[in-house]
Image 1 (cartoon, helix red, strand yellow):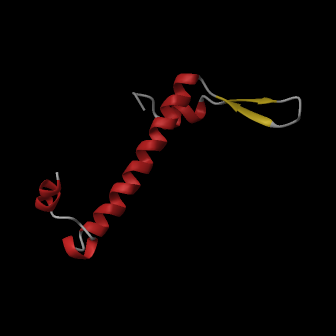
Image 2: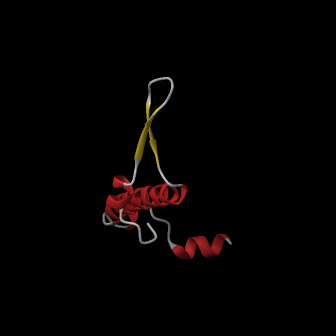
Length: 74
């Protein structure tokens, strides 16, 4: 998160009560962007782990395409 620790972002959240009575969380815009980036990284890591598990099964079982086949189609 560009040098920002997740724990720092989470502890920097400020809460306000809206006129409707809802409790709202307020973050600095840069911290919000960093939090979104961090969440995207976590999601990417999950996708990579899932793909790695599938690929460990081997090329045929995973449905992998041979690189030579791809080059021939280009």
